[in-house]
Amino acid sequence: MSLASVSRSAWTEGDPEEVADGIFRIPLPLPDDGLKAVNAYLLRSEDGDLLIDCGWDDPQTWEVLMAALDRLGSGIGSVRLVFATHVHGDHLGAAGRIRDGGRAFVTLGLGDRESAVLLATDPDLARSRTRALLRRYGADSVADAMDEAAAREPGRVWLTPLPDLFISGGAVRMTGRELEVIPTPGHTRGHLCLWDRAGAILFAGDHVLPHITPSIGVEVPDDSLPLLNFLRSLEQVRELPAKLVLPAHGPAFHDLAGRIDELLEHHRQRLLLCQEAVAVGARTALDVARALPWTRRGRRFEDLDTFNQMLAVGESAAHLELLAERGELGRVMSNSVVAFTPTPGGA
Image (cartoon, rainbow, N blue to C red; front, side, top):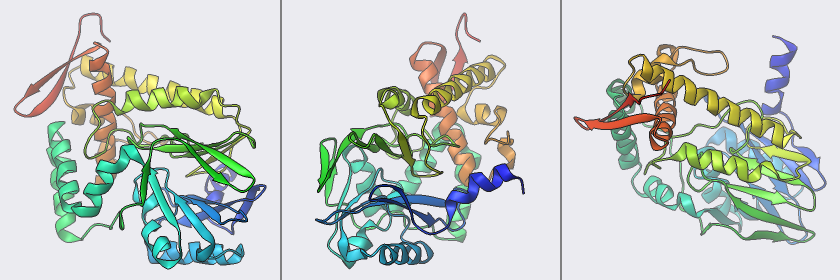
C-alpha cells in the first residue's frame, strides 16, 4: 500500500481527536460501505454538548460512538443537540437512539422534511419511487437489479423516528460559541453547513469533501435541478474566510476556495462529457452513464455494483437536466422515458 493510500484512509479510524479548541472529531465506521466512515463532531460546552452528525443506527457504529463519548468524559447524557447536516442515514440514523438514551434534541434541514417523512413512514414506498426514477431515465436494468437485491435481503433502516425540529437557517448558540446555519442544497434539498465565524471553521457535512464529490441527483421525492442548486451552494460558501474545514468524510483541510474550485471544474468537465456523449448517440441517462468513467479510478459503469450504478445514473441525469435547462440539449419524453438530444451548435 502506498503512502498516499495510507494518508487517504487514515481518517477512517482511530481515537477521537481534538481538531480545534473544544471540538473533537469522532470517526464512526460504516460497515460494508465504500465510504468506510463518517465523521461526527462533538463540541463541548458548559451547558451541554453539540453533536454534528451521528452515524448509522448500527451496532458497530453505536459501540464506537458510545465509547468515544465516554472517553471524552461527556457520555450520551451530556449531548443536548444532535445537528444532522442532512437526511442520509450515516448522518441522521442514530439520532433517535441518542435522543431516547439521553436528553438530546434533534434538528434537520427543512428542505429534507419531505424525504425524512417518507423514509420514516414508508421506506418501501421510498425505494419504489427510487426505482421509478431510474426507469424514467431509461435504467430499467438497474431498477430490476435493485428489486432482486431487495427480494434477497431487506435493506438497512436509514431513518429512526423523525427529528424534533426542521430548520432552514438561524444560529446554534452555546456557551462561548455561536454557529451560523447555512442552507446548502444540492447533495440533498435540505443539506446544512455550520459556520463558526469567530473560529473561522466550516462544518461542511457532505457539501465540500476533500477527496471525493458528493452524489447528486438521487433523491426521492426528486429535485428537478439538484446540480444547479449544488453549484450555487458551492459559490455561496466559497468566499467564507475559513481557516479550517471539517468535512463529514475525509480529513480536515484548509483551502476551502481551492477545493470548491476543483469541484466546480469537475462538474464543468462532466457537463462537457455528458454533452459529448449525447452528440455521438447517447439518449438516456443510462446511455450517458455507460459512456462515462466513474470514480477516481475511471471505472466502467458495468464494473460498478448496483448501488453505485444507481448513483451514476442519478448523477448523469442531474447533469443532463442542467444542460437541458440551459438550452444546450433538447429534452423529450417518449414512452415515459426522458431522452436528450443535441441542439444546433452543441458539442
